[in-house]
Length: 179
Length: 165
Image 1: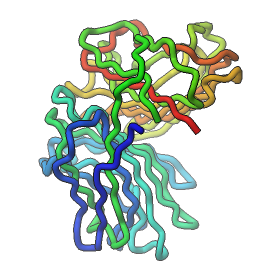
Image 2 (image 1 turned 180 degrees about the horizontal axis):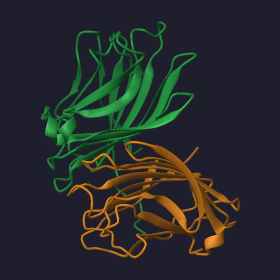
Image 3 (image 1 turned 90 degrees about the vertical axis):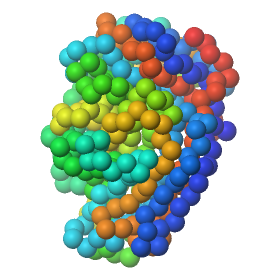
Image 4 (image 1 turned 180 degrees about the vertical axis):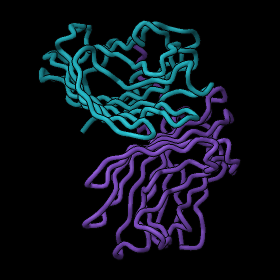
């Protein structure tokens, strides 16, 4: 088995979920978030992931390709947008959605311990709200080359109670090289 | 999910070969973190299965977001594993790709799905989904990847996993 559970976090409506002291023994990270936002200002919420506690706005960029069921569009945030975290654009339902409707986000961060690479997150996410919804592929860039040791997950306002996040480490020790 | 092959480049390469792929799994899952020596901002990874380089055998359909608009296209040539970061993009930033190849060990045509992102600190970025068809009816025993005449840069990584049902 090459995918190892590292930690899980549960939201209670008043906290962000933080994974700290992430082991440096894997090759890749996969973050899975099942959640919903407490925001009431719209139907979909962004999901935000802060890397290493670093919220310097000029360190981040993000992009998305998404569909709403009736149209498709693209979205971009550069360092001048002032975001300060990874962004999964319109990934989760908000408090305006019917009860018990949550969204899903799967985020891959390759080579998270490599100190020569900026850290890129690749995401697949969606929230179907029974009559409306969003599906998207996204990416985010953290323009720092240090290893990732912590991730903090939030949303517009906060993740509601019942939201959860699970972090996995993926190894790459091969059984044969074949090179 | 079992790692089959893993490599980190310590020198630049024109192509990457993964040979002798075990035929004991159902599907293959390839993870790439790569950067190209190109300077167009729009290069991609070309791939061939089992040494079959005949252009007419491969085709693909894409959906692409470029930060401000979306598009979809079809093409036929070598198999496409997604657009890559190159020298026009933010330094030290490598594109991320995952490629899922179903039923690779059968005599069916080979179907693959690709999602990739080539992040950079600018509006125009390729967020890329692809469905690819390679009309070869032999098992995938090797995968050859190239950058269309450009070089895979040092630090590029590739890991191939086998998946059993």
